[in-house]
Structure formats: structure tokens, C-alpha cells
Length: 504
Image 1 (cartoon, rainbow, N blue to C red):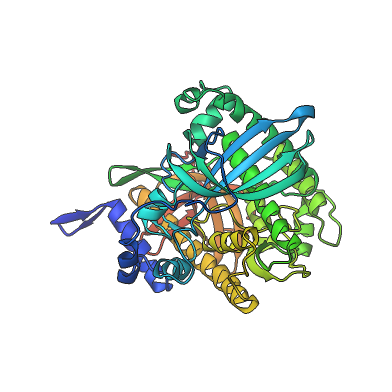
Image 2 (image 1 turned 30 degrees about the vertical axis):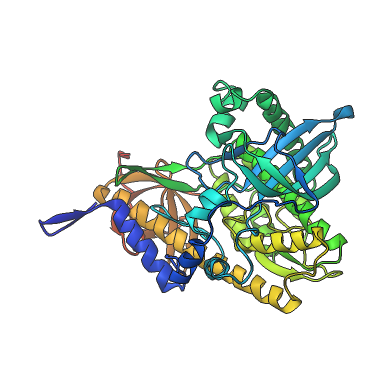
């Protein structure tokens, strides 16, 4: 909360909303829907229907359920599991058919293309699609019949996808579940969530999904998928005031969705490739700064090969997570920065876009969140055209331009989200100037040294005035909060080498 003179106060959420909108406008994003978009939206009065379309299967009776964040309203995917003989399992992923209501080149489509993704800031979500669609008519909501694109996968006892298929279908969500409650049950800390217990057979289906997901995860990591873990915190509000920062932690329920979505994305990419159709690939290239990763590993007594090798890197990461779990998120962040950003690439049939180094997957796309990400909507249109034997809706040139635009906008959106998160942390700490904290040095550059507080998930700059000789990344030190700038998101510390007590 910031007091202006003696007359009124500006609430934390309002401050962050203004910072978010200002940063979006400054960087060329649209925080509001256009009049043309809203006019077109007014002409949509209900969800899309199959209307007798051929090859649309009726899969409503399967035990579909959504698992997402507690407060999620835009439900993009449902999952279902079916045991098969011999220890095999059929996993199905249903993805909301957004394309059926958001037609290519419509006003709503142009609006979505402007930002290319929903923007998730600390105080407000700026959805890619109007809420009438993303949280209602194109969302896989509880108890509602919805069109979907379904990826079917047969998983063997080792976790490999041995067969796959893609189809259009009508589905129905039988239970809206949340990550935390499902994870607490799977991990033995709570009873089965009520919404799952009310649907006969669903608890057993979720347990099967958990078992299969863990097998798939172990297999991926044995093939070189990287175990990376960073500290991400979101503000906790009481009314309009920030009272805490909560660290987002992974859990078994999140892993179910992550593992199944990764598999579905890979199946979708291969489906398009096998049919000679251009696709929008998600690529993380072999790191250009591999030599620096080799150097970091050597500092910890581990020898990596001179050429990029994801299997060897995963072995190193696994070792470090076990030996030094407290510092592992900082090591992970350093490796992530050296790996470089992901990008979208238009891949023509017969070409090789490079694959996804971090997931150790050659063929990969984004396809499972068309309400939230524009590349997924593009892929859905390509996929539906393939299923219906129609011409591809995008020329190679158009697909290449869209890939470049989606990559560029993704980076811009990430910067906006980071800026608002920094401002939220500054708001939380502004009343604690002069307090001392335990911290770890996380980075060093020409403009300063960066530290992360150990008891509050906040990072800031350490201002050194000659007394920081010998301080290096990984060192644990005591710092004093010197200043904050909420609008810019700056948090500055100074070294406190003579402290006797650290206050929290």
C-alpha cells in the first residue's frame, strides 16, 4: 500500500495492475479487447456443436477430468486412463476445440494474434481470448458437452508410447480437480478429493494416471530430459494487500499433466510430419554456451564432454540435486540461462528444426493450450485440416512469419510478467528497510552482484563499495535491505559483515 499525501491510499493490487497495463502498452501488447473483437463476440451465443460432422466420435462417457490450479477457469485439457492387458495403458488427452469458434482471420483471431498468449501478472490475468470464450464456451467446463481434439496413446509398462492416434470428439468433464488436493491424496497426506470420490471409478483412474506418468517421466530422464528446478513465487493477497510470497512447488498431480501434455505434443508433431504437413515446432537448440556449462560442472568435480550431451548433463543435475538441494534452484537457473530461450520454428516436411534439447525430444510442438497460447491454436488448425483431408490453412511463408512473431511476443510477455513480480516483491518489502536477512549470492555481472534471500523468495541487487572482495556465486552472506523502488521493481541490499543477528 502506498500513501499519497494525507488524503488517500493506493492499494497494492491496484498499483500492480497499473504497472502491468503500463508495461504491456509500453511493449506493444494489448491489455484490452478491441471494439471489433467484442462486436464479433456478441454474435457467438453458444458452444460449437458437431452438427453431424463426419468422424467426430462420442467419447462423453469416458472418465474425463480436469486437473489445474485451484482458481483456473480456462480449462484446456482433460485426461482419462484405461488399463489394457499385459500392463499396457491407454491414455487419452482431450484438448478444447477452440478453432471451431475462433475462425482464422476473424476479429477475435486477430486480437489473439496480437499478444499470442495470455499474460499472467501478479495482480491480474490478461487473457488471450475473451472470457466468454476462454472460461466458458471454449473451456472444457464441468458437466458440459464440448468439442475437442483427442490424442490417444498406448503406453507400455516401461513408459514408452507404442501406438498413437488423433481424432475429433465430443467429451464431457466429469470432475474439476485442483493440483494441490489431488497431489495431497496421491502422496498420502489427505483423503481422495470429494469431486473425484463422487464419480465411480475416477479415483482408480487417477491412480493409474499417476503410475503411468511416473513411468513416462523416468524414461524421459533416462533419455536425457533435464531435471531443472527454479524458485518461482506468486503474491498472496488478503483483500487488496500483499501479505506474502508463496513459492510454487511441483507435485505429483502437476507431473501427471506435464508428462501427458509433453507426450501429446510429441504425438501431434509426429502426426503432422508423417502426413507431410508443415508444422509449428517448439525448439530448444543445443546450447551455444555449452563450454560454460562444462566449466560449471567442473567446478563441482563433474566432467562433461566437449560436445552438448543432454544425458550427461542430466546425470550431473541429478547428482547436484541430491548433494546440495538448497542451492540446486540457483544452479538450475544458471543452466537454464545458458541453454537459451525456446523458440517457435516453422518446419516443412523433410526438414529438421533441431528438436527440444531440454526434453530430449526430436519432434515437438505446442498443442494442448489453445485457449491460452496462439501457437497451440495454429497447431490445432493444422491438425484439424489433416484429420479432415483439407488443404493446410497456412502457407509456408505465413507459418514462418507467425513463428517469428510468437517467439518475439513470448519474450515480451515474459518480461512484463517478471517486471510485475519484481514490483510485487518490492511492495512486500517496502516496510522492512533496514532489516537484515540471510542470503545466497546467485550471480555477478558488471552492473552488480545478485543475491537471493533464503527465508523470503526474493532476489535483488547487492550494492558493494569495495568490501565485497572474495564474494562469489553460491556464498551465503548476511545482507541489509537498503531500498526498494516499486514502480521499477528494484530491490537493493548492502553487505552487513558485522551482523550479530538476522531478523526475518
